[in-house]
Amino acid sequence: MCVPILIRHTVRVSRQHRSSLFTTHSLHRPQSTSLHNTNTFLHSQLMEPNKKWFLPLILLSLFPSSNSSQRHHTPAPKEVPCFVESQLSVSPTSSGALPRIAYLISGSMGDGESLKRTLKALYHPWNHYALHLDLEASATERLGLADFVNNEPLFAMFGNVRFLVKPNLVTYRGPTMVTNTLHAVAILLSQARDWDWFINLSASDYPLVTQDDLLHTLSFIPRHLNFIEHTSDIGWKEYHRAKPVIIDPGLYSINKSDVFWLSEKRKVPTAYKLFTGSAWMMLSRPFTEYCIWGWDNLPRIVLMYYANFLSSPEGYFHTVICNAEEFRNTTVNHDLHFISWDNPPKQHPHFLTLDDFQRMVDSNAPFARKFGRNELVLDKIDTELLGRNADGYVPGTWFSQANSSIINQYSAIRNITDLRPGAGAERLGRLINGLLSAEKFQANQCS
Image 1: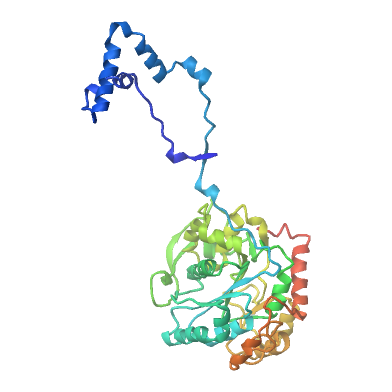
Image 2: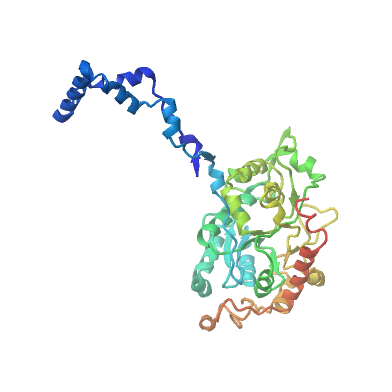
């Protein structure tokens, strides 16, 4: 049994106070006749010469000697101090046969239609989805996306698509993308409590496998794993990102603008080690709960530091997970994306085209980025990898061919937990098995 340290009090009785215990009746008016009579009787008994034996008896009963106390007093159990932090922990991972994914799909001005397309390519009734159009998008565009979510019969049937009504101003180079991600995680934890992994995507991301493929493959791996590309070798980023101090206007302005720089430099932290990597990841539910609750305060301290860090989405979650003792051994060093970079990489990757299609397939990754709006390669992915019709949803056992223009087809939906994995599951299985069975798997965790 532990006793909270801050509520322990000790009451000490002085010798003067002990003697006053027998005279208080003469200093205060009795509250009742019976009490007055009792005090009078006690006083008379104590003052009579032939009753001198009575006083030592009372004193002995009220204040026993140390020897008597040692013989008859039972020692109280040892009090062990406890702390609030020790009573907090993450929720256990689910034990169901089929995992469930919570997605954040975010976009900015002009991304409304791309968000719809990406959502339809990712949609499965078993999962949860949060959509966000940032404050730079017009009110008309945001209302159009909100109407789509609210009026789509399929979404109404399962209630698993949420539109973030309060928009955030998001700039990739500042910390606002991190705060937007945490905002979405908090909503999904509050309103959709039965998911296992969180995946953040943008309107320029697109899946390369079906959700049946993805859920089938993930059902065979531990659900505490976090797929996050990371390294402690920050290299040139130490001088160009860690030491400079930047201010993101997105923290206080309603208009998007680039970050600006302060002339002062700062030292690299010594209280924790910096990590960097990809801004796109698949995080376990226990770790996302830790980022929101932050019971040992590490997530908040690191968030305050990254508020003035250039491109903080490429470092915040990585630094938190690799400095948290209970999570540093849960990382898989991969972001589950195919991305085409320059060498050395620049701030943004190449836009993918038809010329990149085979390389995307050969990567075995479940997602790819960055795609332009209505890029022709997206149609090829729909046709050859997802089996998706134009403006429709990706079919599976739960639905043969879903098309948003044919409402009565939704009545034919069968058991949503029955999966029909295809070639995408085989490709993804090769990737996951290779990552988890690699000889250097343990060495790649937070290294």
